[in-house]
Amino acid sequence: MAKINTNYRKLQAGYLFPEIARRTAKFQAENPEADIIRLGIGDTTLPLTESVTSGMKAFIDKLSDKNTYSGYGAEQGSQELREALANHYQKYGVDIETSEIFVSDGAKTDSSNIQSIFADDSVIAVQDPVYPVYVDSAVIGGLAGDYADDSYDRLVYMECNEDNGFFPELPKEKVDIIYLCSPNNPTGAVATREQLKTFVDYAAANKAVIIFDAAYAAFIKDSSLPRSIYEIEGAKTCAIEINSFSKWAGFTGVRLGWTIVPKALITENSEAGELNQVWNRRQSTMFNGASNIAQAGGVAVLSGQGQAESQELIDYYMNNAAVIKQGLVEAGYRVYGGDNAPYVWLRLPDGKTSWDFFDELLQKANIVGTPGSGFGNGGEGYFRLSAFGDAERTKEAIERIKNRLKV
Image 1 (spheres, one colour):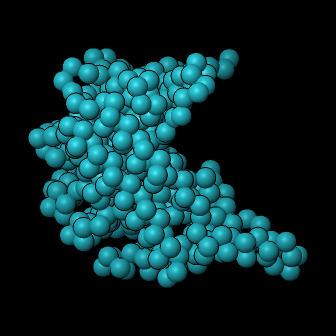
Image 2: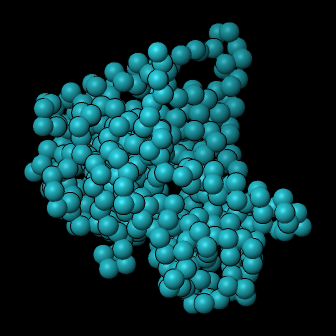
Image 3: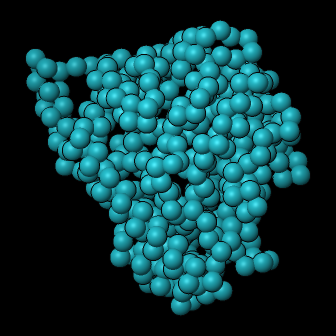
C-alpha cells in the first residue's frame, strides 16, 4: 500500500511567495484599477546582456547543425564553464580545482538537495530569520522534527537581530550542518571575515559542515568583506559553497548555478575526498546536468565583456536599493541592508505584524513587499523590500510610501 510522505503535513502554512501571489491576485481582482508595484520577490527585471545572448545564440546555432550538435553533457558541468569559474575565484585569492565545482540549475536546488549526502540524524542550524528553502527542505527530508511552539524541535535556530547586526552567535550546542547566507536573504547583512572565521573554527572543532549560500556575493561593494567563504583560512575542510548566476547576470529564468565541494572537506565519519565523490554520485544519479545552452551563457558571463555588462546590471539594482533605503529613512523607518545586498530590511512600528503591514502597504500604496514572518519567527516585526525592479517604478513606490505610510 502506497503512503504519502507525511513530512509534507509538517510544513507550516503555504510557501511564502505563492501566498504573496495569492493575496496580491485577490486584491487586484477586487481593485482592477490599482497600479501595483512589486518590490517583493527577488526576481530580476533587466534583460540578459548582449554577450550572454550572443553566447547562447552561437551555441544554439551549433545545435542546429548535425556536425556540431551535442546531446548530454557532463553531469558535473562543461569543462569550459568550470575552468572559467575556477579562474573567477582566483580574483579572491582562492584556488579551486575544476573537479570541486559542480554546475547546477540554480542555488535553490542545491541548497536543499545537499542535505541528502548527510546522515539522517544530522542536527541542522539555521539563521533566524532564514531563507525558507533551508528549513522546508529539512522538514520534507525528515530532518526538522515536529513543529511546536513556533519552531521545529530538531532544528537549531540562530537568532539574528538588531543587537547582533543580523549575524548570529555560534550555536551553544553541537550541530552537524550550519546554513549561512551572506549577503543575507532577507536581512541584507553581510558577514565580515572575523565573523565567518568564528564559524569556520567552530565547524572544524566539531566536524560540522557549513553550507554557505553566496548567491548575492556579486553585490558586495565593500572590498573588505569576503565574497567566498574560502577566503577564510581552514574553510575548505568544513564548508560547501553554493552560488548562482540568477541575480548576478539575470538568470532567474535561465537557471544556472554551481556548488563547490572541496576535496579537503571532511566529516566525523568520512575522509578527505569522500564527500566530493558522494555529491558527484548523487548528481550523476539524479541529475543530467544543466542546460548546455545556459552553460554557454554562463561562460559568456565570466568573460571580460560579460563581467563588465553584469556589473552594470548590479549597479542598476544597487542604485534602486539606495533609493529604497534613503526613502524609508526619510519616511521614519529603521532600515538595514541595501548597501552590499539588493534587499532592504525595515523595522515596523511597534505592535504591527508583518502580514498586517503587507496588507496595509498593498491597500494604501498598491505596493507588494515580503512579510518578515515568512522567513521565520525572527522576521516578525520586519519587512523586506527588493531592489530588483524598474528604477522609475521603484522611485514611485518609495514616494507612495513617504506620502501614504510615513511613520
